[in-house]
Amino acid sequence: FLNVDFRPKEGRSDTIVKQALSKASGELTLTRYPEALDTYRKAYDMCGADSLQGKINALSFLSQGIVAYTHSDYERAESLFRQAESLGSPDASYYLGEIYYEGMGVTHDAGKGFELTKQAFDKGFLPAGYRLGIACLYGIGTVANSNQAATYFANAKEAIAHAANSGNPE
Image 1 (cartoon, rainbow, N blue to C red):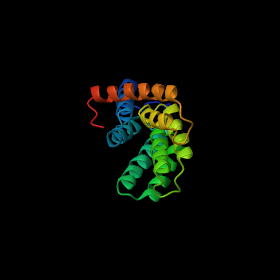
Image 2: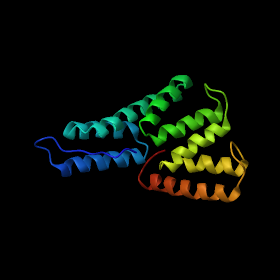
Image 3: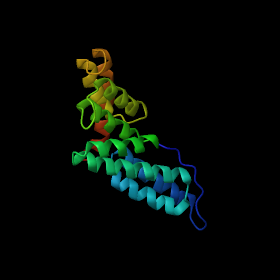
Image 4: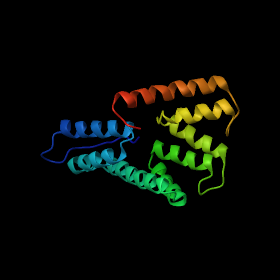
């Protein structure tokens, strides 16, 4: 979700750094956040790129937010997701959308939930398409539109199939 401009540190091959970044990007696509965070840290040790540090920070906030979210600490989760979102994380936008859709620690606001989920989808977090499809189908936070719902479901299906074929348990 962030472009990385890097130069390998002396003694490091840019091919090795590119392989590490590619691996981390794949892990991130599959929502394997702890693995992606670890791989990005290793890549950062190899090149020290500032934009890579931003990605590491975003993943750290996102991972901490998910822990808070799963422990029903929604106020803390919202704060951490906002920090991750400000660093470019589409996954954080998705989780923020969920918090607003469900009114967890915030005032229930389906319109804001839809808006945040659409931001996640527009930034490349295709699994958000399932939530958007449901919203469009039933008019939750948006005007009901079955054609738009079908489009979102199709995009989500592709993302879910890719994750399943890649061995992602989520």
